[in-house]
Amino acid sequence: MTEPRYPAAVERPDAMLALRGVGKRIGRRWLLRGVDLDLQPGESLALVGENGAGKSTLVRMIAGVEGTDEGTVEARGRIGYCPQEPGLLDLLTADEHLVFFGRGLGLDAAEARERGRMLLGEFGFRGPQLQVVSKHLSGGSRQKLNLTLALLGDPDLLLLDEPYTGFDGGTYLCFWQHVERWQEEGRACLVVTHFLGERERVDRVHELVPYLEEAA
Amino acid sequence: MQGRDLLRRRGALAMLAAMPVAFYFALLGKGVVAISTGGVGMAFSVSGAALFSMLAARRIEPRLVLAGFRPLELLLGRLLLLEGLGIGIVVATSAIFSIISRPAEPGLVFAGIALTVWVAVPLGLAIATIIARELEGVLAAIAVVGVQLSLPLDSAAAPFLPLYGPLRVLSRVGGAGGELSGGLAASLAYGVGLSALAVVSWRLRLRTR
Image 1 (cartoon, rainbow over the protein chains, first blue to last red):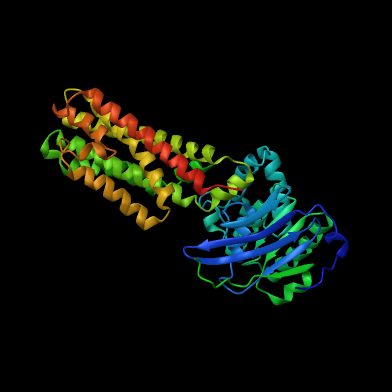
Image 2 (cartoon, rainbow over the protein chains, first blue to last red):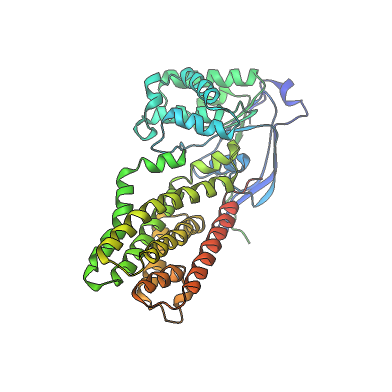
């Protein structure tokens, strides 16, 4: 693990995220066990590990869309979760996704469209694409929409599972600039990544190691 | 919005409507038996549509719950949408069956096929929430509807399968099937029971901290 780049942030007692002894079993095999993790407001953390180490599973457990088999997950504030694979409805347009998710978040249609279009624009999502059904969008554009839906509710804790898959070089750099901005705004960011070069872009790195022991 | 996604699948909707009619025409020469068979076709198509609509949304629904929707709200929305869509098809198919076969009680044709939709939608949803894999889910739906189709209504096992009630009502079109109330009660019970099963299973699947 690297040292925190912003030590002042990690001394704050109001952790956005606290994991204690978290474990997950797949059948008889433990995929994860004894995972402890903290994340403070304004802090960024890269979650790394080899394929099958359980990174996406851990993020899903933190997001609350998958249960744990042991340990506790405590998260504070609103969560924005960007899964590795865009969970989109094939025959809805980008605009319709914004309105749909906005409704769940308590936004009216106009507000959801306005906020969503602004976010999409920041990632280079072109205006005409707003009326294209998601199955006809490119992989990168689908991922931009996926990321925007995670940000739409103005979240305090961002869980981003390889969110830049399919991004071009410019959008990729733009994404990391946004991570810095979100930190400055006090948001906590957890980013799942494979790229070693990204370790320099975050405050801390947490490496997940596959747990190999057979469950009793 | 999920309804909009479903209603844009025009090819699937056309097949959904065509399947009961195709089943009916396959046995057109067999008198009112064709109507019961059309009802079975309706059960195949509607339960399949419910199953796939649920499975297609399995990636997005956890996110929608995280965004603030309640799991029950999402499931009931889908249930009502499919029931509503099914009723539209029921009106068209029962009219076709009644015009061609000229049954003595056309109202029974509508009631029997409507009850088929009432049971088949939650059947598809329940299978999707419990199994949650395409192939296995489709095989389970085919098994349930197929076994029901092959079992005589007066067999001891028939009442233990969910389409017993609607088929009993449809069989009255041809003068068999016993008391109408028995078929109605069985249909209502299976519809409610399968809906409850789908809700419980869905809530467990989408449980959050």
